Length: 440
Image (cartoon, rainbow, N blue to C red):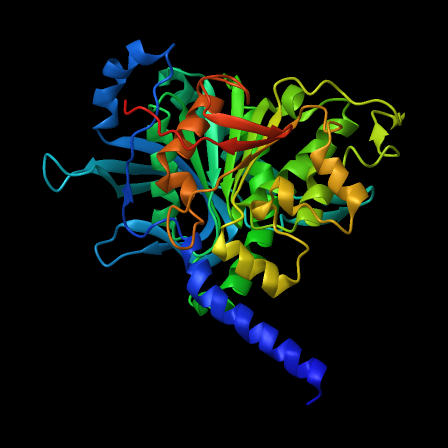
């Protein structure tokens, strides 16, 4: 074996060992998620007393998944790590629990109930004299499932104090329960004012930490088509005023692909993500995606002036973006992403991005991220804390980060607003303040 091959082998072995230690941390937390205090907006402090009772009772999430269903020995329903060729949706309850009156409140997953299911993919087609056509049975089944899902979203909106939807997509090595608990924690941080939906893909299989990452990676790609379809259906449900999309780790690559495809769909219909789908926020926590890949996906529609805008291309035209905004939370101290960078030979993972870490050998590309020509669409929030020795799940463990998410989504506060504890570095780069938020 030559020296080059030996070095490559050693590099792969080191990366594998790092993944074994670090990427397990992509799972938010097993079984239970601790609830931490978040900052109260001055304009909304008067509502917190009324909401506190809500925060101590069982609440219900809408789930959408292409995991294969499983039935436990007691006949209860759940979903595993295997892929299903159909998309299911329903309700999962989340209950706060305390081991003692003085202990920290935790969340526990309760009953799971399936409401509907889309046809198996690929949908059936039949040859006609005019070419291929979808089978009437597949179309009817799809339309029935779509109507059921939209009716469920509308029903939840009717009883929510905010007519807005928050969708969460989890990362690598998360079970169905992990995904539900993380979504429940985000929802409770937002005072349960929103309709909360967990989009959960087939992660957390039996391949182990190293090979399991590769399996999960392909399963996340498998989920893109299903989740794009689901996102479109949700956005078009009656009563949706705003849609907020939140993703963590490997789930950010899923969300980036979904946003890419929806943005192109909107553009060719002379519309935008805000105008057509009411998408107000896309939030990436610790994104496990290569910096260049993220740029290519998220701004594909911007970088293709030959793309049809309606009936023909219009190179200088971009539709109004409205409230649509992208927020990326990153940490140079994220050890899980350091392992991922080493394994895949990335220039940099987006979740490690910081002003001082922009690629020096690619000044033109770096200036695109550092400069003002993002049109105000993007903010990069640098987190310098640890949260754990891996430093990858700070979106759930750090109260300051959670408070900033609340201010962004619930209070609609932009970066620079005093309700957000951010210190400007150089726009669009910000840093989470070290000042701790007040307990609610």
